Length: 387
Ligand SMILES: O=P(O)(O)OC[C@H]1O[C@H](O[C@H]2O[C@H](CO)[C@@H](O)[C@H](O)[C@H]2O)[C@H](O)[C@@H](O)[C@@H]1O
Picture 1 (cartoon, rainbow, N blue to C red):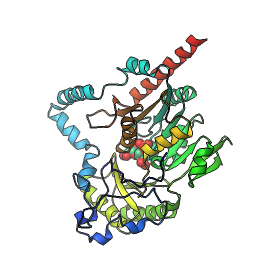
Picture 2 (cartoon, rainbow, N blue to C red; picture 1 turned 120 degrees about the vertical axis):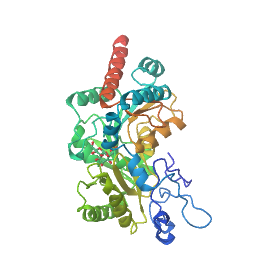
Picture 3 (cartoon, helix red, strand yellow; picture 1 turned 180 degrees about the vertical axis):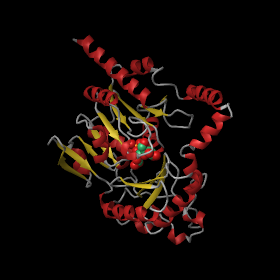
Picture 4 (cartoon, helix red, strand yellow; picture 1 turned 60 degrees about the vertical axis):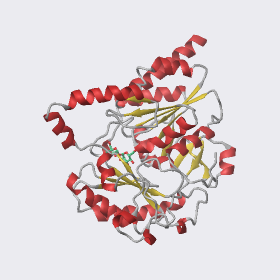
């Protein structure tokens, strides 16, 4: 794995806020190269125009990105009241399914392709294993989903890669059979592999909660005090906005606006932008009604998949089939790694059409559970047939 590469990475989700858009002097732009004081090679570089002003890699403004991260309940209700929502939406979804076929309907095809291959499974948490709910602290997964995940994890190497802190996602999932990557892959517990720890200064030997030796990889370790500080500032600057909440995800911070009246979303965005003016080493990305503040390092869920495959001794093997299931923009980085490397399948969880780097789709966490059960049943019957 190339942790030291210096090539300019592309921003795959809504790009960070550029201050020029808000009329702020370019010297305050958040991607000052003076931020390159640590983690050489992991520092994210952003394309610049000859003028020295950051190129605006986004197609729309930050408020547009906040709005598009999921439609408001009001809009859906309005469409339904006009009576055209369901049929129009259904036919749009059916058309979209031709481009991103259902992984359940295509299960036989997937299974045929997987024959003789070793599957490695990567799962996002929110919106994939648990339904999206208003209160992020209550995004529990069902017992039936837990047992489906446990079964697949007994049959295939399985990892959860979440934007949540690793501790939080472990608290939700509670299974010891898995590997966990929190903070969008910036906090990974993976199997011990000497070549990995020898080559990565941010990788140390540790023990998991079963006292088993593991590799702990935290490429953004140096950002911890900064993240704590920005978390406190974000809590303070949003505490008068009804419904806004801030979640500390250890190496990144989520500012939730799902429960904020949409006429105040711009205030949430503006306050976050204002705080980030003092943090050129932090950037902003968008999720489902959430603004994500994270370090400017060249690391994402795609890099985490590559890292875990290497740690598992499964990279550069023709007989390995990685499958990644996720619903959010940050999962696109992982889909892209699989698609570009022609290495496996991204499966997008979406109940409405959206463009993706995934190959297949599933409608919601219930379909994810069905897919996991099908995978487990298929593998178990293959194993039985060998006895
Ligand atoms: O990578 P993930 O596991 O998908 O985590 C991404 C974010 O998920 C959570 O927020 C989302 O789910 C919440 C609960 O359903 C919902 O209220 C929120 O609007 C969604 O954006 C989590 O709270 C964030 O910290 C994660 O970054």
